[in-house]
Length: 346
Image 1: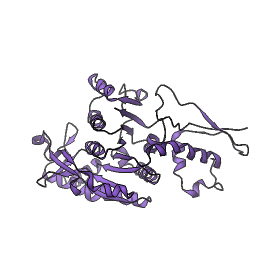
Image 2: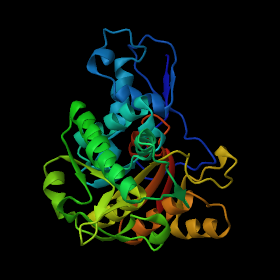
Image 3: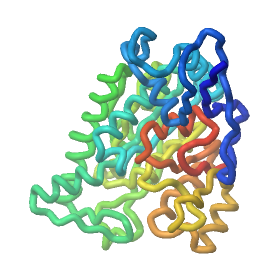
């Protein structure tokens, strides 16, 4: 009897340790006539997303029908775990720059929405802003990882994030079969901004003073996907550029989200930043603070882990920093035990 080997999608609710790989799991069927096939989790997720014409048993697919059914079936415990729960996803970085990765992320979102997850999508758009600033002969400037935003730059930020990037993402989600609604932090007073403490150097870079998510509830409750640009205004109507990670974290807390996910350009939190094999698969808040004190979490990773810690402290169950460069990383994070980066818990 021949066997096809598949990595298990366990329902235990815990990620496997980064020190070892999950055990092998075998599926047998007496009528299958095929060669042994080894499939990793990324391939499994890709299979789940293939259109019917590709997965039809009469096609030239090397994956037997019984194996495909088993793959779908093993996703059930994860779907049950998150069905009806709110998941806030922050999108940016490499996954936004690459068309193929962008397509992967959008299809992941639509799939998760179709199986009952309540998705809220928050985005930045740094590369696109830089592109348009350069076209207008405005030199992009940064201070401690934050964009220096004078009045002319703020105008471009609003135009690009709200008018271009946001509507492009809405169109892609709609095309993929879900229904998205584009908003910014200004709409419905979703975010009220205040100046950053370093506003003298940073200009119109803001922090979030308050969050009022009431405008989102009718959308979420009717299975729409809110797509939110990280721009907000203060009580006087002045627009501010808001860090998208911060916006996603504060929104997740205000919504009482089950999970916050940050798509990034790194594998996750590393014990040794020079060693990709030192990925920390799961860590609690105390562990994060200890790694910061030891200097193992530094630079641009500090704002990301800080917003995750703050979100968890305000009631979000878990927060994950995952590798947006990995195709279908969202599905790997939600529908498998192995995940696609680092999960932070309370």
